[in-house]
Structure formats: structure tokens, C-alpha cells
Length: 234
Image (cartoon, rainbow, N blue to C red; front, top):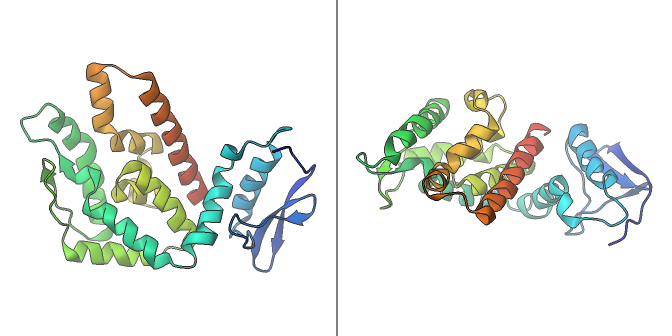
């Protein structure tokens, strides 16, 4: 698609902030008014439009796409997404470990256990750790507390959390990356990303880094960092 606008601005209304293209408000991909809660987010979305060249690159709108997802999909039924996110808690990557005598186990213990323990202290819950891949359910009390935490989040935060959690296959990591005020904020986002992909990186170190897999991981990492930045601007 050719660029069809000249000027991009961010504008405040009584209902929230919006992006204007040549003075005209944008609508979401679902046809709703595209209103976001903060000036910082609106300006970041405006920068995506302003940074386009003569041809519009539809893959360059990470913030817009997250905002549209929050407005079009999450806001009408946030409870549905909360249920999906709790599913990640049931099979959280950080809770499924190698057997203690396997070479990967010490590294998992060193990198994953502090993240799990900090999440347990933060929310007052207990996560079941599993050796091997046989599923074991998390305690109902843990899921109830986490469900209540998720229910307090607005649709924009839930949209960001869904991206973070899906890419990490870990609600523990998603929640750590979501909140800059959380105890895990001391852990850099890049370290959280590497922790989520510890086994994949371990295998690559052993057998070699395959270019396509490396490129795919880099794209997913960029999406992870964008979602974290999206959350920080709410």
C-alpha cells in the first residue's frame, strides 16, 4: 500500500488518546475507535505511522496491532483471555525440568528457580516443579490467586501479557516482564527472554546454531521486547 498521508499527530480526547493522519482519526482493524490510555503509547503508535516510507510496511505496526487486539478482542471479553493465560500457568516452561542427573538440570535450577521463587513470594503462591514432561496440575489455590491478579489488569495490559506469555510459554516470565514495579524488574528483559528459551539455546550451543532458527528467535525476541515496551507505556 502506498503512503496516503503527510502528517501524523497524537491527540487527546475525553475518552483517551488517539493518532491522527492528516487530522483524521484512525479506527481499529475491527472498526472501533482507536483510543489508548496514555500519551506515551499514542505517540509511540504515531511514530510507527510517521516512520513509514513511500510504501507502507504492515509488519512495522507492533504497537498498533497490540492496541487493536486490546480494543477489538480483549475488551469485549477479558475473562476469556484470563482463562487462556491461566492455561500457561498449568504448563509453565519454568516448572518442567530435566531429570536431576541430566546435564541441563543444574543450569535450569540456576536460571529458573530464582524466577519461580520470586514469583511465589510476590503473589503468595506455590508452583509445582516437575522432572520430565508428564503433566502435573498446579494447586487450585495458586490458580485462584493468579486468576484474581489477572482480573485486575485492563485490556491493554492483558493484551501485552498475552504476547509476552505466549512467546515465553511461561506466565511467570510474562508477569515478570509486564510490570516494571515488580521484584523481577531487576532481571533484564533480555535475561527473561533467554531464560524462556534456555533449552533451545542449550541445544544450539551443543549442536550448532541453525540460521533459520536463529532468525526466527530474533524476530520473536523483538516482538517480546515490543510487548514489554507497550506495557511500560500504559
